[in-house]
Length: 306
Image (cartoon, rainbow, N blue to C red; front, side):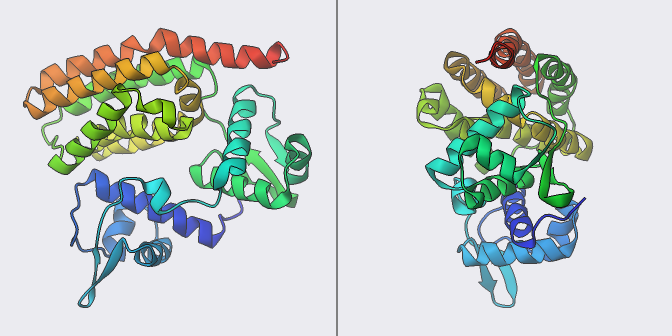
């Protein structure tokens, strides 16, 4: 498999570092070392070195004497360290790729020229969006300048399998003896979910809504203190990315699920972990029927010529 371009790899790694620091409750002044971050992310030190340079350039990290330290954690990682695809045209093309991939209207392997014709887009724009897709993990570069879309959850059946897996693991993660949700993380999750419960998703892209809601579940799995739960959550989040964008269209369910997220946080902060686990199980079950219907409808539009 061809390697991700170095500049893009460094930016993607920088975003992973910020997400890791946020999930671990790091505060300004925390020491940042290549060795510890590479171990936490399961990567080599070279991309971490490039990522730290990006964070320093963005003013998010800086030297404290001879040591590199965190200066601040941004509220919006996408805005602080954007990937290459930016702007309305890039967002529209990205959304079209998501839609057509979910509808199975795109071949598994496709060339950039074919995408340029299909979407009436220039080479620079297509390349920028494909590099973002590459960084997010749902495509890879193929020989002869082509791109290969990777297997993901792309329909109701796969989503149902994911729900059964999450139903088995996410409540259990809340009952881990080492579970500890840092105060700053809990406060951030509460702010995000309060905004969504109040209808804030209406002004957000599907991608932003997915990041906020999947980030809630990911943060709790990482707080379990169990690396196996945390690793599984990262993988499932990547696999669910595209179907998550479709699900984000259900505005009524979004408000309700954010209210349920807040109830789970209430139980965690009260120290009632069995109560939080029971609410999590009920929360996962509550959204299954409506989300499965959204996915079936999205795919049916393609087969009906929509």
